[in-house]
Image (cartoon, rainbow, N blue to C red):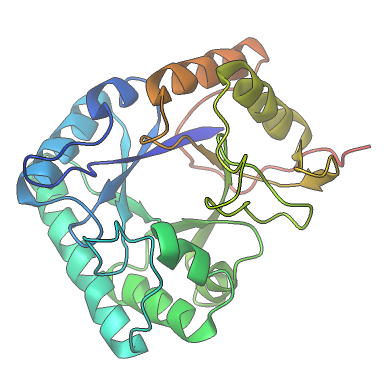
Length: 259
């Protein structure tokens, strides 16, 4: 199982999370590309740290929305969205190359991530950007998302993702951050869910109903309070359960159906 985290989300004098510590735990780094967060200094530093730790570099592309941290929907024209994603990929790839590494995959951020679950025009726009930039890149997102289906048709590699510290609805979607209980806080509870997810392929929803989620990668949010402790607890629990924590290189794993 791959572990990923959103990193490089500082901007100017503002910092968010402990990127250096998280890079000693996770196997893949979703690095902000300057549109929802990040700047030239932050991108270069984070790529260098990722290269040093042997962590896979992912482009965490988002809406052009620094003020809203990319968590607001933007009704952007598809052609413009394609160009904005291309610009972000180009910027991050430059710093990755300077650090002696490269982008391995693309993961949308925030509102764009959620929008691409169902928004066909924007999904096609992002797929077009990835395909034009580098068709060997993988794309990371939630199972069932429209954009992953479009990416698969376009010949891109698709990796499915689950979230360690976010609650799920009975339909398998994330509970909105505006609702109580959307973000989980207890490291032991989060780790137990991740082990269940990795070994059995399901988690329990907020209603108590089991939800099947097949995932190649589990995300631990870097801005969750206690993120480093949570990530360490999750990794230790996975390894104690016999799960190998490694960068995604293989096709989607198949897990058992919940009882």
